[in-house]
Image (cartoon, rainbow, N blue to C red; front, side, top):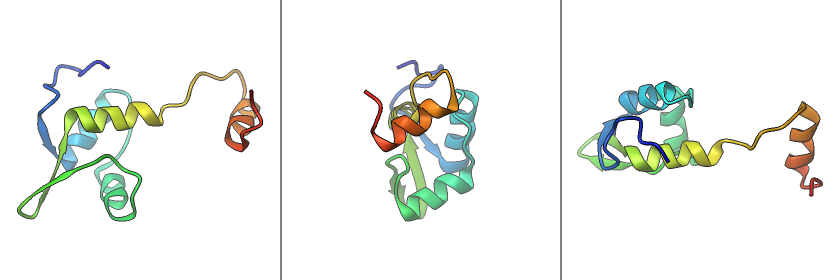
Length: 86
């Protein structure tokens, strides 16, 4: 995992985290991170008073885990989703 010039333990505010993830090639908005913080499925976060902070290593690991492997056609994605691919 490459840290893109950010120390792994750096704590980022939501908007900064979204910007850094987008710069790293994982496009996401702060609003999407906020929604995921409420509904689940997003990166782990910490609270500091009323502020939400994301540890860079956790956010980047979460984004990399969501990245699917390479495919040659969209039909391969459908096979991977229904579990029929070997």
